[in-house]
Amino acid sequence: MNQLEALRQYTTVVADTGDFRQLAQYQPQDATTNPSLILKAVQKAEYAPLLQDCVTRHAGAGLDALMDRLIVRFGCEILSLIPGRVSTEVDARLSFDSAATVTRAERLIELYQAEGVDTARVLIKVAATWEGIEAARRLEQRGIHTNLTLLFSMAQAVACGQAKVRLISPFVGRIYDWYKKQAGSQWDEAAMAGTNDPGVQSVRAIYQHYKHFGIQTEVMGASFRNIGQIIALAGCDLLTIAPELMAQLQASQAPLPRALDAEAARSLQLSPLQYDESGFRYALNQDAMATEKLAEGIRAFAADALKLEQLLQAAA
Image: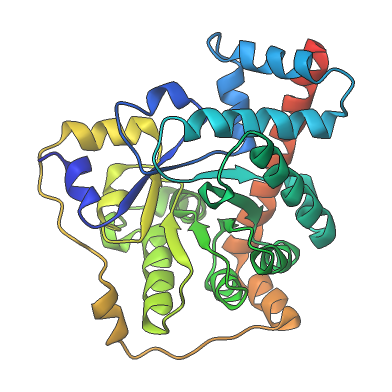
């Protein structure tokens, strides 16, 4: 049994890609996309026709509508290749506008419905700002399931649990990046690997909190830099993994034991946590890493959304 097969014994494996032609060889249950991944895909020759076809079929549509149609087209292609769900992201430029996020999410769902997709197979990705979490709460109440992304802190995770969102995506690799950069020449890669990795520790703490208190929101570790981070989180509800790292897992026959266990989490001594808006904002403000990485992530996704719009404009 290779490590990818072993991981599937404990964890739902999700593909983190817009390059849907890679999916068949790894057989993930679900898949996630974001503007950066789709931008990367449409710049490849084999995907460029999808962008042109979208522009041709919907000539005269506004740029935001074209963008939504393009990402839904990718989502539909992905859903034709996997048995589970696809996560489709709301424009990051709406991360601080709850009402606009709800409206855009509802439009994405309508586009999927128009393509005959069972919307139980779609998760709407929203940045885990206070406004994004509030939008997700409203969407969940309307039966639209959500994936809260750009999540770096326990405060964000707790607020998502309170909002009863379907799934969260805590970002392991970006947390690791921040602490490694802060440490500079003092960083000891070997000493900070595996269970000592700060990104791994963050996801473990969130997973344990959710399981201990019976929070139904699914935990999906994301943004991995190496397979050691993945191995250290075996047993997490889901892990979304880039194809290059899935290939490494598939190529290894080394043992891969369970690292996280819901029963063990229930026996821990943990204190309950709860946040209102002001408490959430203060807790996030006190966490320099989470504050910086959330802002940086929104800026990066917004910039890539703008680049996608420019490609759509050029093709029109």
